[in-house]
Length: 424
Image (tube, rainbow, N blue to C red; front, side):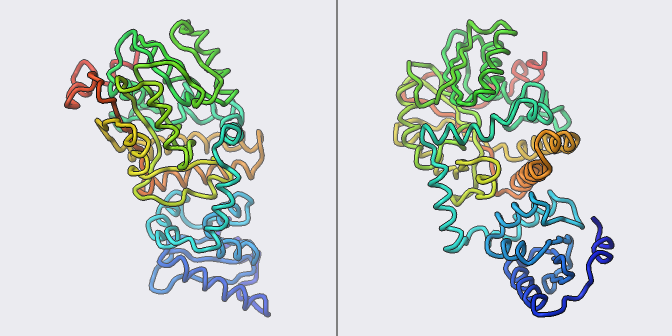
């Protein structure tokens, strides 16, 4: 919908008491979100924009109720209204708009107020990552259907940050490069044993077994993912090296050389970090080593309530300081930390491009509200990584008796380890 369409549909210039209320609330919202360069247009025709700022974006808001929802709770109010079709961006590109919003509205996000704190507390209680809660949370996201994820992920269904050794490599090549990057950081050797907490559709476990000769026990509570992974392992004749276990990582037992978690820490929950550390200690002791790969943030704070409500219930992205609380109480040495923020922004750009190409199929499979919500989630994630409010951390750690982590990174980037060696 273009601005000209709106002017033909709605009489510009509010009248009556309701229009006065709309105008006042619009102005209060503009004051709240300044200096975001946006002009707001209400369905009745009332408009408002910040002073001394040239609007780069125009947002149409359907009615007074939608406006009130956004005023009371900007993130969730906007996200729900976008998903429902009650808010539209009629000038500007969505990712750019959200990136600008993240950069200019830190004051709003960092000072949630009592109303949003109350709502967040209630939401966290409902989504607590107990054994039963985690099963519900994971099922609601990862068991949406493999056919849905096949529309926009790479051919191996890797749903985590890729690694782009060269800017123009394909998403498929970048995901293989990421898996090899992780394996090289862990210095995997044939015959070693690896426990993977949260294995997705199994690509990482199969990659480690095929290219590095390790034995892997991979845990996952998503039924659709684990069944897909098992079938792929059978098809590729790797069942003697990889065991996919449909169970919570907290129930893992045994002694392993390596602990690996790629994209799982976000689902643990802040209150369970000490428990995770105890599990790692139980599984690899002081001789083992490991890697945590996770979405984090530059500072501690509330994770997106809209994403938790609509996309990832129970999710929490920790600051680096918080993540280290998994390891430090148990005497693990942090051997290497890398931030792949730019790589995740690029990964998400690939995902959104493919998602947009399949938008009609997504809407047919589910509904238009679902399609709009997921597009906003992907676009908002790109904006978050570009703006720097989100990071992607990889932490390599080891016990004090481990002898397999060199003192430098030189071996990660020597000619014999270049990413192209794993493209075959």
